Image 1 (cartoon, rainbow, N blue to C red):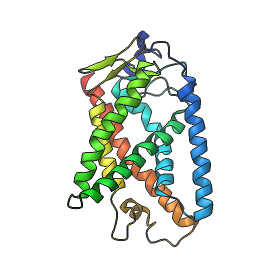
Image 2: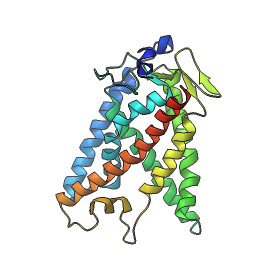
Image 3: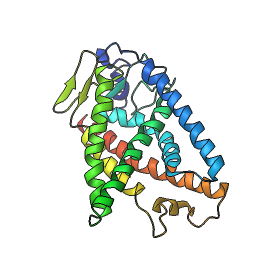
Image 4: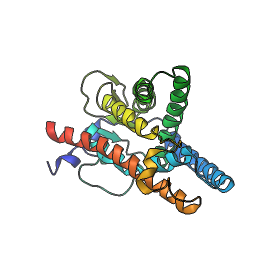
Length: 254
């Protein structure tokens, strides 16, 4: 098992096709991330506190390192045409794009912003429904469809591919995208994360911020740092468990 992580090679034994315009995702992710960072920083200077969108942006950006073991467990490899981190570690995908921190920032910000919007709308329309039910109804199909659109397109154009698939999949000359694994587990992760991020106390504050005592801290930079830490810990822990489940799955079948 110790040598299996690298035996696929950086092109997945030829499974990675010639990517179509990889700079679109690579450069585009960095530009979008920088624009969002400037926007949230200016908003913080004006309001004296971070919005939940800024916190999800920061928390999501901090999760990027978990992508690489998750990819290994899911049999995903990125095109070597991207600029890569010059590092190889066991139980991680061999190609680690430099754009990953930026991509995580905007990718999950978009997901949870839309989920928050849809959850609020549905709860207003169905006041008798519990928060848990509303989140499940919204998040489960949303995560699956979002992943299908974004990652399915990315595989078709060769930005990355799944070189081992289980069950039905979308195939192209440049890459493959599975329709069951790891997409279904990712949707389950999304539901759990959304449940935590929409959980609030009686004062309307996010329960996860109780983790660092941010809910008791006076206004100021100290409280905002506590809030940032709470979001980073929570989001990394939940996504880390998802990544670990994929690694354990691959270890179990190898």
